[in-house]
Image (cartoon, rainbow, N blue to C red; front, side):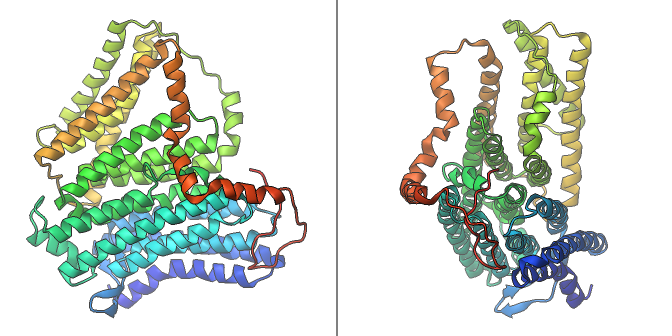
Length: 552
């Protein structure tokens, strides 16, 4: 395909969004109707362009735009299965978020400013997923952080927003530094910033688990960048405090911007698969974060804080899956989580009404060990049977088998609740059908994802002895957590359980230490003097948000 034409097609989407942002910045508040139409039109055209990119990919498999730069570093866009999948997902979610914002902030004197910042953020994310060179990858990575920072401070007088933005600034600057270090090492070794050339050299000349020291260091820096960008323990605190921003920002952040970490690892899959220590780091940090955040999620009383812990857990799980080398499953999880979390945040205001209207009857547990064990065995038989039929065995694909087992473990509690109660045969059959459907869906969708991404990821995870040890440790950790969840409802509440619930609800106080570092108490003290001041005058377009009380 003509490189110039490809460049124009791929750049059209972020260019239109930036045009809408430019109009929102220049036009007065009285022109907000026009700004809304421009923002919606730009996001709608993004969907059309993403679909066009899908059609191009079917014919060309891989396409690169023309290169502008010096000595292999510069601007180029890349069209492959990864970038097309992410582009289409971002386009769909962005259109929904922009449309929601037009109604959600209707009447807000700063709506044009918000739409300007929102469209700039979306354009930055689109540029990130389409990057074909290390230089533009780094620039887009930083731009997404800067754009998000401006959205977090949409209400700059709110102390919570100030604290969250400061924490996020520190963590993300560390992520930027790690990515910069990785890029320097990669460029020094390969002499080019072109991703395709780098991938070809890794595939052709570098054996798995035997990287030169500088490439092993580059892989470690990439892993640290992804961990920091995706709010992993212990730097997750800032994500819990972004609730001072309008709801659309939370939806876009959790459904899109947090994905930058796992996306970076998936994009550099050939390097990460050949690495030893980087993969182990992702397994350890991602696995622990997934377990920690999932447990903390269950103790939260605030809907949005619970959703934040859910996102932290999902990002940890995605990074752990990347560390295990099952990149198709990580990509599948990334896309599914993005749509789920966008819907969860945009509908969070109606969750209470839904819960009140729901009629759920809890089954009374008997607490008999034999029945509990029967439920566990039944789940295991269903999963192992499907794994055998799909030709996924621990001997030839331990990583995929382990990921599937972890996902199916979530159904074990359903089975044990049914077997350890007076449930009817119909309920037992429903539970069995659910387990069968979940297991089948995982293997089929993972196979489809693997086929779609086959040219952009390693064909099979390469597991060293130490990596297999880590995999079995992960399986053991998730199994113990599952058993605790099954047994916990039967254990009388005591001093220890109450204390653990308090510690988990506060995230083991890691965020408190972060508050101390940035001086959060002084921020609240300073702002408390004027927190009830209001200004009724509308802002001029492009000015900073005025002081007024808006409660979510």
